[in-house]
Picture (cartoon, helix red, strand yellow):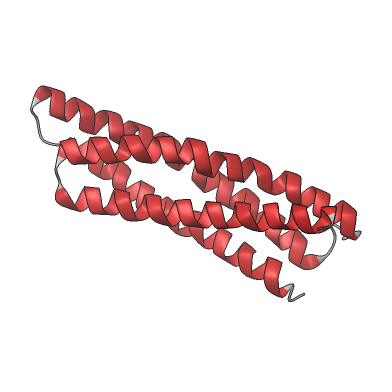
Length: 155
């Protein structure tokens, strides 16, 4: 196996982790939210926050490193349109992903507080959930488009 193929493997693996973790987190948060059970939401959100920190963050940090190395090894120019668009979309995904992490932490904390006080979920939780859901659309959508651009290199 060449160094290029090893790095390409790690780069593709990072993309899979980002997409897979993102899909799993979205599914579990949505499923927990639909129960309206503060204790279940608190436990699920706690796991989601850990998963985001371990898996998504490490993959998000790996992608530009492995991508940069692939550019160097293949003599690919940053001015290639597919790559420039991918980088812009990566930045856009980050603009939406970073706040989502903090929303998940706050939703977890609100759900835990509701359980501890024996109260229903507060309105702030529902507002955060709606924003979390809406932020996921451009964040996750950007990553889906980047994957297509990496494979197809259409322009």
